[in-house]
Length: 122
Length: 108
Image (cartoon, rainbow over all chains, first blue to last red; front, top):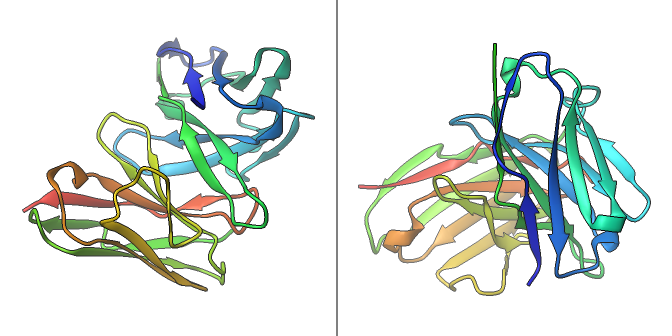
């Protein structure tokens, strides 16, 4: 079974750093892009960026460029999302998701991790 | 960026109803359009990919159509477990994917 399992809930203070993880299993981790999605409380889904674990090629949505860092360690099939200095506005649920493309078809996002809730307070 | 606009933003319906949600892209995206279902406290789940292809294991009451800039998502006969929020997502602008704002489907 293809699965993405994320690290647990985090409660942090403003200005602190944080790194959350997403571990893939049941497929070749280095062959599929992994993306990150933010969902603020009561709001919709926002695309943050994506990484190809095979060579660590990383792309960011303009809204998140410079605000977060996406990385991966292919030796342990794990992708990461990190902040160097958290703000209260980073309070949200964060999902990792695998990008799938088969042949010449348009790609889709599946499966999704279970989500990591991050709470940042002063 | 490609903007995705869903309508309506919320919808009340009854079990057994047929419902349709619309998603419009700010530019042509061919059929690079996916639909997801999200229930409260859960991660989104893929239902439809490439505008009209049903993901494996998803009931056939769900369907998608459209191409270019205008897309529809239909549930032919609502079941109690279908009350959720639905999102469209474009995958044309790789890798800057964008989602619609969501449609919350509630019980009437």
